[in-house]
Length: 234
Ligand SMILES: NC(=O)c1ccc[n+]([C@@H]2O[C@H](COP(=O)([O-])OP(=O)(O)OC[C@H]3O[C@@H](n4cnc5c(N)ncnc54)[C@H](OP(=O)(O)O)[C@@H]3O)[C@@H](O)[C@H]2O)c1
Image (tube, rainbow, N blue to C red; front, side, top):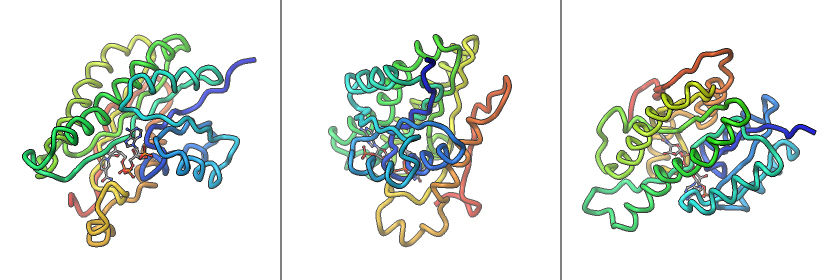
């Protein structure tokens, strides 16, 4: 029997990733939900269609863990879309950021996405194609204070995936970069959410955009989508 195909979403326990799980389920897709917090992932299954949501706990900062997780997924399923969404930041200056914080941000946001991409590529080639969607940030477009490490991680992934896109064109693999502005999720402090949350985009709106990019048919690829709150950056 053919394996069922589905969407592997990292950072699915919260914010944009969690909203993306809901939106993909709403259009009938199977979702493979990864993050570190298992209780949050279990809640996701309770809240959504249990049969379409499969939990695969994973710390993307560990290459070994990513490899093991991917092996588990493909032992049962096919992955026709990877969404690199897991991400962290710190809102600190270069000087304030410890080496540990710096390592964590780069490893999670940049290397974590590289690990997942390297795990899915041979599989996507084998099954005749696929879609890789990376959730970047408007920090790749504009300079924001207190975000040097975060900006380095997102710009690094932007550069990496621009080259990747060219390398995989002949394999029917689409590489899409979503570049969102401020979105009202727990990545922000409670104070910021209280003060500016109303102006920010909703995670569900960004998630719908991700789904629409995935759904684009035929032989086209929307390579980059920049999306901001109507009232501009925060
Ligand atoms: N919110 C914004 O304004 C905004 C704007 C532009 C781009 N983004 C990007 O959007 C993405 C999602 O962020 P969000 O705003 O939705 O924030 P969020 O609510 O804090 O969600 C972050 C997600 O990443 C997961 N994660 C963090 N470290 C991980 C690791 N080592 N391994 C696996 N999963 C990990 C978290 O799950 P666990 O803690 O359970 O592991 C959580 O599910 C990020 O890449 C962020 O940079 C956000």
